[in-house]
Length: 264
Image (tube, rainbow, N blue to C red; front, side, top):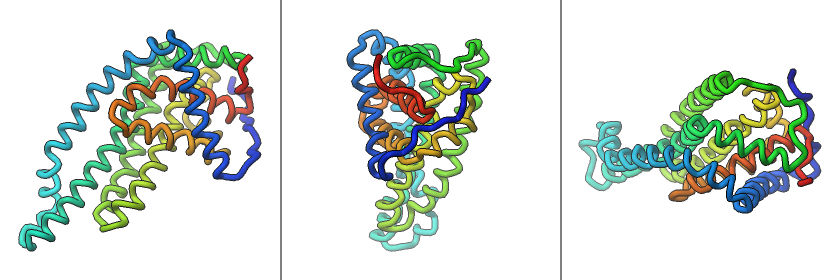
């Protein structure tokens, strides 16, 4: 039976709630650093996934010049200055799209690889804050199948959003200023949806449930998700921050459901 869809009433403006979301990641980091057991649980799957994605992004960076030339054949007869400028913009657009997809899909893949590890981290965080009201017993394989299905849907959505952003990235100035901001917002929202999966599954709730509940306090969810997104862009940031993000996402889920986030 699904838990009631209650949400914590917003008490500040959008900017204040956005910062509250950022603060939830910092609180998750604090919980993580104070718990050596959680650190050991969380680092292994992130290292495995991180190695795969570093190799993939390095390959993209290696071939980005060839890809830029491939999608800009119209510039072959232009002067060297304009041809090079166009292909630099195209290369940056490829790297931007690759970064967005890597950040979102890294989370999905890491959560699948480390499902039992991150589930345990999330459970331990909930125990510190009063347990899980409305918890349901979900078998491991059923939980894994649901997690895979929802992760595939979120990655597919990130591709659908990322392709238009990639195309817009060719627009001078706008493509290098506005588009990265939009990309961080979109990526942050998708990360928030992905990371709160474990506490919502524990309550028998699926992707549509967490989407509607987080939407009720979107600035907080965005603040948390964008903070995670920015951390994931830092070299090795995704590996080091992932377990803390899982802990912070548990706090976000509890807050969004109107449950206590004060330690007992």
